[in-house]
Image 1 (cartoon, rainbow, N blue to C red):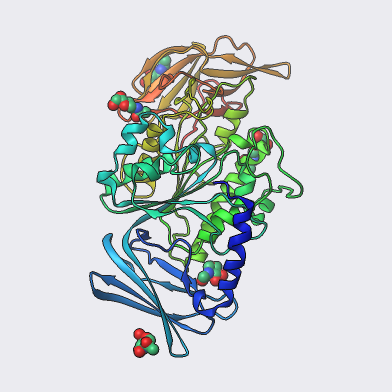
Image 2: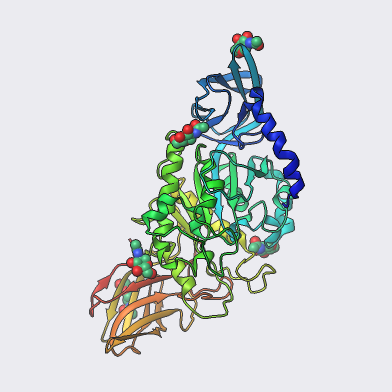
Length: 520
Ligand SMILES: *[C@@H]1O[C@H](CO)[C@@H](O)[C@H](O)[C@H]1NC(C)=O
Ligand SMILES: *[C@@H]1O[C@H](CO)[C@@H](O)[C@H](O)[C@H]1NC(C)=O
Ligand SMILES: *[C@@H]1O[C@H](CO)[C@@H](O)[C@H](O)[C@H]1NC(C)=O
Ligand SMILES: *[C@@H]1O[C@H](CO)[C@@H](O)[C@H](O)[C@H]1NC(C)=O
Ligand SMILES: *[C@@H]1O[C@H](CO)[C@@H](O)[C@H](O)[C@H]1NC(C)=O
């Protein structure tokens, strides 16, 4: 939204004038509003706002006309803020929340209505998260499909940068709302985030209770803009100057989006976060992404846990989309490297450095003809579907397959010139000449050679490695910007249709007959 300068000139003095009138100072935080979803049990939802310091604030929860819960607090002197933690609530609604400030025998009352209890998910990242429902495949159908999802509520944060951590959002693009075709399909790269919406919709299909979705994303932004100074320092990132790269078209200052678009939400109780970002780091601090991403997750977890008085889980579930593919002018391995670093170089999640995380592999969801550029594939339904499988397993404890096959064991059959990979899952294989590659070394020189498929069984495949006359140093799978055509990668799990994630494994200790484990 473009706001002409004169509007600022007009509105700003009014806001300042209002600030001097103590009566107007009593308010809820920007995101406590009609139609909101508050986090359900076992956590307690946080309600907070501002008021006159020293005043008493009473927060009452109403079901129909009956007061069912009352919490009393007072406004803190320096911050002018107040906060209460509600008792854990079962999912459902609607409820009303009333907050009353009493100061010098004068009362002010605020009310919000149609409040539901359910799970609140925060969705963040860059353009592939910001892409709206009107930009995806079958947009008309998806936009019309809202009647059954009136308990999935949506909220979208405005694009704002700040040099300091803000306590509340400076501006909101879409205040809490029930989904309609208008607010879901507002425009291009604005709101509502398609991945966020579709993820919430899939979750609702399974959980059958309210879901709150908060979208806070900005196109063309590197991870450094979403990271606090603390987490950048932990990875040795120098935070002076601007972030410069062809792939950075959004804000290019360190921490500015953390400060303005994430930190203001840290006092609310959340269920978890989903994230779709990484394209803007292919040419900026790429080699650090295996640190900056786990550090961001850890820092967000600490901050939200503390900000919500321990109500948001310390290790809340964090899901992300592994980069899809795009038609690159150059053939380099920057995309595969970011994909790998997104897993902290493990190839799978959760892992030791990324506990309680889940990932949607998307490298097979390419879109040559996307009107928004091939870097913005339009199949966000499959992305959200795969992500919600991960959430069901990691966040909701369901026993289901949420990640495609990774080799569990590798054995070199030297006499046959084969490398035998065994999987813990069933595999479905389509032949593709150069999807597996081996690094073959002789005279201190290594090069990547294709390792064609030899024999295939239900849970193993053997690669022909006879082209290597030296030492077999490493094996990699799908190590390309565009590894396959749409849903045509060589390896899937047949039941779930989940693709095998890309991986790289060092084989230096692999002597004939020796085994090496990749997955845990
Ligand atoms: C203010 O609210 C308190 C508590 O609800 C109530 O006891 C009191 O009578 C109210 N005062 C006025 C002036 O309305
Ligand atoms: C991250 O990746 C870089 C290069 O890609 C590597 O040198 C480094 O050891 C990795 N760091 C961690 C913490 O895994
Ligand atoms: C939000 O949480 C932080 C960290 O615990 C705390 O310092 C701040 O006062 C909280 N805000 C409100 C309004 O209570
Ligand atoms: C679009 O709708 C068609 C027809 O229902 C369906 O076959 C296709 O899978 C849908 N595409 C996506 C990406 O959901
Ligand atoms: C690879 O290992 C599996 C599991 O041990 C075995 O069933 C299969 O026959 C082996 N493949 C070859 C070509 O030896």
